[in-house]
Structures are given as structure tokens and as C-alpha cells.
Image (cartoon, rainbow, N blue to C red; front, side, top):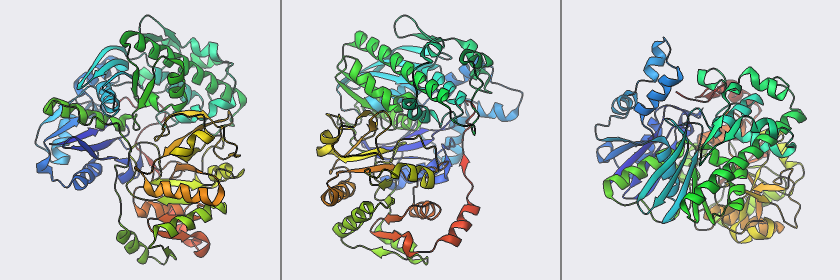
Length: 582
């Protein structure tokens, strides 16, 4: 049984393949198209999934789509978003999804549709390894639902309560994101990163925006919001509430903006803890699964686990809409086969394309780039560790690409976490992003407890904890003493694990700074060509491309860098002014 899952047409389009109950392949379309958050039908990701699974279009038994276009249309019409414009009419055509799948993918078999929040919940529960669990899904909006409460038991997943649009925790957070001058659908994690620099002095004002009501319900005070119109997130009343105008994107970041971010983060945590506690009261289950875009707020996730009676937490690593493709495919598997696709917990997200040593060598030989080949893995890792110890920034391209928003040691930028200048250097010269943004540590799983207040595995960077290391780790320690930890395991990423061991042998530090291999405004690199372009156009010192090391100091990229920078056109597939409703 070959089931394809698809999410598309809003943001974070993705495709996956569940083959005989095994999640075999998954990738976001943006990685292939190079359009950040590409919402288009994932044709290239679809092609990849077929190739990775060793199947043809004729072998696909079913395509599962991650939401119900008919139900979404009802909400869109209610919102008044329908306009006298043929483009808008086409975009909200409820038959458009089926037409696109038939015409652009050439698929004539059955297409099954599942509610947006059910797909989110399934992406977490069916891959959690839990036989029973409570399931909390929180995002901007699906069809109507913005927050859902569900139970999972065996093969069954049942939503028993939901909060509906326009009342939305996700849209509240996105509204403050927009007010602070960051892009909606893109900058919410910046608010999370900015929050520790502020004081919760606007908590009372933020609390006026959302009112908790009975059971799992809550209400937004809509006088402060304008997202229903589809033009912007906030109304003028929000400026009146805060006593200041919105921050412009290029305006200096002031303390008051940090205070608003901190206040928003605190209120988010309070609401999530309250609603998760309600879910526990209703279910009595010890295990909690979370999904939806809000579940990517790793700070809040940690607060939920520590401040509710739940004993265990699983968050889908691709908790955003991309992960909805996995959930839809899992629901189709349950419907068609009668069993959940897997009973074991999802151990890794290395589900994207890989490139052989021969393919990399062929690419390098077609250029004038100077490089060194390392036929022995041990020598490669020792040479990489030595460069890291020298303070060099490494582009690390190995194995299958990660699925989801985090780079986890396959498409990563790596550096020494002990360096006091490394964080500012990477932010300014490589990532080209805001200086307040933190970087995450990757640590050997068996050594994590020595350096972080963490007593369980954290392979997906989905929760934060305090740094307790005897080592000084300024490059990965946030201003509040926290870090978003990735524990690295030999059985899921042996080469990255062995690199950490090599660095530990050399320095006594089993930790590396790990951030995504891309620059601001671009998707994470996918191919060796993408990696070369990113390497050449930034100030990364070395590129470890499979079994090959390219050192910048041995090459003169000045002219090529100018040509590539002139040629590059960074594209985004979504608007950043208002949440992507259509």
C-alpha cells in the first residue's frame, strides 16, 4: 500500500510517502523550488517521494489531502474574503485541489480529504509511540478550528471539542508578531527569541486581548484585530492599548518592543498551560501529543510539560502545515488498512533527498574549486573537528535532508559553542539576521545531562531548558540562561554523532552550535549545488560536502561571489502582512 500525503496552497506545502506502513519519504516544496514557504502544489516533492520509494504514479493507491476545501470555503465566505476578482474566485474554488492533483500530478486514483486539525493531530499521535494520549492542536486556523482537544487510543483519534475562528491563539501571537515589525507566518519565532530580553510589563494589556471562558474555550476581543478583512493583523485600537504605533520593519528595536514580546510569550504560556490542564482533566491520560504551528514554540512546550500533570510529551517535529501531509497520509492508512502506520515513536526526520559521493565529486570536478577528498570517515571527522576548534564556521552537508523547520545535523551550519564572538559573527556575517536571535546546541545524547537541565531525549529541538554546564558556552546560551537542545543519537545520525565525539576528544566539549544551513530569506539548502551557492555567497569558512572539504582560504571566490549575489533573487511564496488564509 503506497499512500501519498499532501499539504498545499496556503503555506509550507509538502509531500510524503507512507509505504506499507512506513514513513519512507517527506519533503517541503520550498527546498526544491527555492521559494521560501512555497504554497504551490508540491510537484517536485511528489516526484522525489516516488523516486525515493522506488514506485511510479501507477503504484500510488491513494492521495490524502490535509484539509477539507468545502469546509474551508464556508469560513472564507463567512469572513467576507470573497472579492469581485477572478483570481480570488479561482483560489477559493473548492474543486481546485482535486483539479490540480489530476492535472498537474496526473493522478486518477482516489483522493481522500481530512480535516486540517485532524491531520495535525494524527501527525503527532500516530508517530508518538503512545498507545493512548491526549492530543492538543493549536495553530492560526484550519477550516474553522483554531484549537482542538482530542484523544488517541490505538487506531482511533477523536476530536471532542474545538475553538473556532476568529478566536485563535495562533492569530493572537501572529498579530503581536506583526505589530512588532516581523513577518507573519515567518517571524513568530523571532518574538519567542526576543522575549527573554524584555520584562512582562505589558501582560495586563495582552490579557485584555484574550479571555478564557468555560471548558477549553477562549475569546479574542476583536476590537483590537483586523485580520478578518485579510489586509492586516491588528486594528488601530491595538496601538491605543499599547500607547505607541506599530514598529516598522527597519525601525530600531527598543526595550518596549522587547517588553511586549516577553508579555506575549508569558500570556501564551499561561493559556497553553491552562488549556493543557483542562485537557488532562477531561482525559486523565498521562501522555500528551501536540501539533500545529504554535507547537513549534519550544519555550511554551517546556512550560506545558513542567506545569501540567502530563508525564510525557511528544511534539510532531514538523508541527507546522508541512506535517499535515504526514497526518493525512496516516489517517488514510488507518482508514484503508485498519491499523496505525507505525507503533514506534518517530526517531528522526531524515526523510529528504541524499546525494552520493560520486554525485558530489562529479559536481566538484566540473568546477575550478580546490577541495580535499577524505576516503576515510575518521580522517574527515578529525579534520572537521580541528577546523571547528580553530574557530572556523562549517557548512555541514551530509546524508538525507531533514523534514520540518529545524536543521538537525544533515543540512547544518556548525561552530564552536565556547567562542564568545561566534554568535554575533554568524548572525551578522553568515545568517544575516537579527543579533538577538539565539543558536541551538547539539549534544551527544549520553552527555546531555552534564550540560543541560534535561532528563530525557530531545532529538528535534522542540523544548528549552537551562544550561548547567561547567563549560562556558556563550554561543548557545540565551540571555535567560536557556538553550533549545538537540540530543544526537548514534543510531539515527551516526556521522554527526561521531563528529561530536571527535570534537569532544579534541576539546572536552561534546557540544556544537547547530543552526540551519541557509541565509535570511532562503529555504534550507537541499542539493550540493544549493550548499555551494550558500557557502560561496556567505562568510562560512569551510564546506564539508559529503566526503569532501572545501576551505575558503584555499580558494578565491571574490568574483564568483559577486556574480552569484547579483544573480540571486530571494522569493517568498506567502504574504507576511497577514496570516495566509487563502
